[in-house]
Amino acid sequence: MAEPKENVLMEKIVSLCKRRGFVFQSSEIYGGINGFWDYGPLGAELKRNVKETWWNTMIRQREDVAGLEATIIMSPKIWEASGHVSTFSDPMIDCKTCKGRFRADQTDEIPCPQKPSKCVNECHGEKTAPRAFNLMFQTYVGPVQDDSAVAYLRPETAQAIFAQFKNVMETSRQKVPFGIAQIGKAFRNEVTPRNYTFRSREFEQMELEFFIKPDEAIEAIHGSVATVPPTGHPGEPQPNWGWQAWHQYWVEERVRYYEGIGLSRQTLGFHIQTPEELAHYARATVDILYKFPFSKRDEKGELKGEELEGIAARSDFDLSQHARFSGKPMGVFDEELRGAWGKLPKEKQDDLWRRYYENRKKYLEKSGVETELASKQATEDANGLAKGQYIPHVIEPSAGVDRLILALIANAYTEETKTDDKGKSETTVVMKFHPRVAPIKVAVLPLLKNKPELVAKAREVYDLVRTQMNSFYDDAGSIGRRYARQDEAGTPYCVTIDFETLGEKPELLNTVTIRHRDDGKQERLPIGDLAAWLLARVR
Ligand code: ATP
Image 1 (tube, protein in one colour):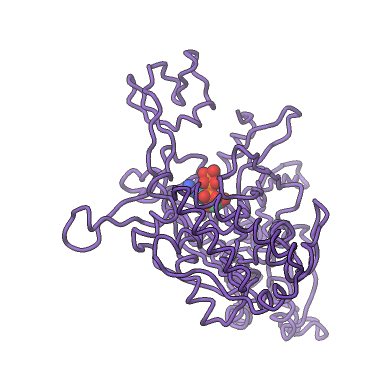
Image 2 (spheres, rainbow, N blue to C red):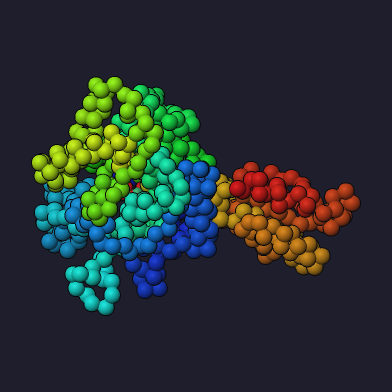
């Protein structure tokens, strides 16, 4: 259970978010709706910046990833193929006394004395046996509300990527290994939304599906699959990388991304899924955690952290499922593999053929295909490998936008207490966002509001910077108060226009003061250099 001190911190964060317009309860004037949150003016900017940094890092700055923007409602067949219709459920229990409804695997926060039944609202009532509750929101497409019109709001963005795999590969002229990435809304009818925005019913995901060659193909082409040290970044991608190296690469790339927007490694944690936790088709999954104030503690009293992102090596499960359910081929032809296969000694060919056959057969049997048919299909697949054909495997880094926003807010939240000359002390909040994600990049402040020359010059500077980045103009109140307001919003730079800007000291004509949020330091800069100076720091 979280320490009371940390609950107080969470309360302060929630209150600041409301007061400053980061996050509001959805439909607040009607009493709210559980599990839904709106982003206010500062939150909307923060979210936009986060998505932009992800899109830039994952797509624009790479040559091997293409973007996609798919619809939220898709053919319901997609969710049959993905397994969501049959298995995307949480165990739910009801309390017969208070009528509360809980997730059976998440009721241990406030243990009920009447174990084994537990109840998060401390009611001691008798509980029903757990039953599966499908988390997908259901709707109807078209005017007739019958079974044939049932559709779902997507519970993840990933499936659209698999369904459009062929179209994207062909139009972007990519070859395996390559990735397809998407940002978008996802919906899950969570049994118990909680921890503020952490577990919501409507949220956003940023997902990459990175398609790679099966290890058998790598071995056929390169003689062996590269081995990489078990920890640390394995360096620039190499042609002989198998799934392990790619998986490790993406875990480390994602950590670098988080570091690049202000979440240091110490604030993150890792959870390597155990064989029992892994899905039958998954080879490995590493969850990147953030140590939230509400996270549980380990035996040593350290915060354990909650999942920000999962990076899964999902084998060829997803494309195989869509190939089976749609009847459309999802495999690729690999010229290099075909060429290499013919040059392999017979025993190597047989060894690779057998291993590929076994993997395919295992997948087919686990997916419910009866043994004889599975053997026949796996034989065809292994024969295909020998001709240069395979279904790509996939590494999936899947992150939640809203969880990251909450992590950035919690990470930025800092209280500073200052004591003035008269011994009076005041505590203020400084939101120490990384300049890349900060909602407002720069505030432009005339020293005094009632001096038209200062105001005119300040408006001129504001007009100059606002075309380049999100900027804010403020002339209300003392300069100290205005700095404090920007500190609370997390604005990294404040630019003040004073009499020196107007030429009171001729050598300082057309220069401004830049005040740094985190240490209060000030420096002077010519107006002509200002935009470039700021852009170098906020991008
Ligand atoms: P959890 O175990 O916390 O329910 P998950 O393992 O089901 O999460 P995934 O299906 O792997 O989550 O989804 C990928 C990412 O989407 C998660 O790492 C998380 O950041 C985000 N996400 C998932 N469910 C929610 C939710 N209800 N609210 C906000 N973000 C979510």
